[in-house]
Length: 476
Figure 1 (tube, rainbow, N blue to C red):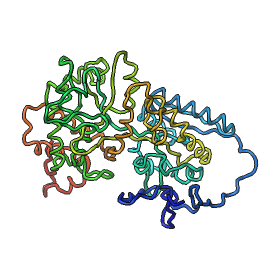
Figure 2 (cartoon, rainbow, N blue to C red):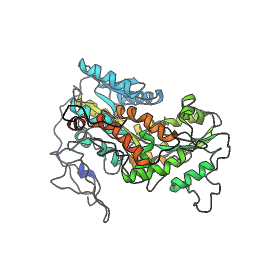
Figure 3 (cartoon, one colour):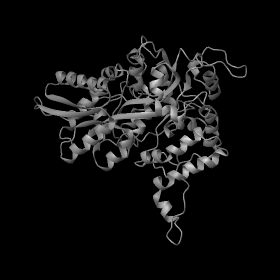
Figure 4 (spheres, rainbow, N blue to C red):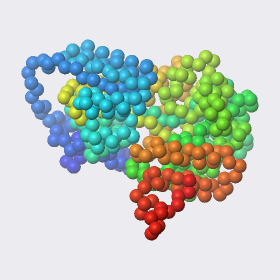
């Protein structure tokens, strides 16, 4: 039991986290409600005496699980549901598949309004606050701990932390996909000699922004474009974070963009020397005619920024030899992570059965099946390091890049207004990529920050109104 602490002030969930080694700062994870039962691991630790269960078999019942994603992913969940039902014939698991997150969100909301919501459902971490406010979910830490789910080192800590709020784990993370760089090996040769002042690229260590630029400039086929970065906050965010800057003033409750802050300006200056070069990056007009993904599939684009869900489509393209690298570093490793989890409905009438299926759905067996689709980066760390995910016989060869990128992974800001922010600043970001002159850069970035201000913090804008009632002008 020496590896795990048991303190009276800690939640049962926190008691499952390993004691940090000397010299490593302890991060407090607000996950796990203050449970009465004492949960411990093998090695001399006892368990609370379990509560007596009703004698006899459970009556037959059905539970519903709403999932979304590619057909291969929803089919994998349907197979898991069938396997679970075969093992537990008293519980029939019915999968409700949806093609996209948005379709699932809309359908689930309509069903909840009529009292017919699913017992479990997938949700993006960005939905967490809204789901909690609507009382649409209930914590999952207690039932998972009671079913001996090992939280010690078995799941991505950052993913568990992201789905934790109000001292409890609200949903269980199942897919944690970081943005990476896909590159065409026929166009980008990482072994190609670089200028004398730039170190050779070591794929195991990733690449710096200077190495990235040099690799693009050494394209083997000049007729193709080197990359197709879109002018979006999502694709700029890793570079801002890598250089020590921030996208917003508060990740959990953003009230302002902070692109014009010193560290953010410095980070973007390095990147803009690449994206503003028309010999390297596709212009917005070119991207409008044919997307970066289409050009990459056709073998006419050197690098593409994207997530794990691109892998099956790229594999299906004949003669496309591709691999992955981390997002280039300005100073330190950083990337954007997309995170989804499985939640138990706040209105389910079959909580225990839902918890039973959730336990199965996050097991090694289930995570391996989902990883085999090629779309999912499992939060299950054991499976993430296994051939079930790495799939060494298939592209990309360096699939471990996905797990390595998670160490510097961060979520995009949580705000209901974020889609509106992205829409408002899109033309201003595009101008950064194409306008002949953007000097001084800090002033241009200040205009972008100001464009988001009335969306993220409308009360402050109203309070700064002039005595006549006319709001202070905001540059757009």
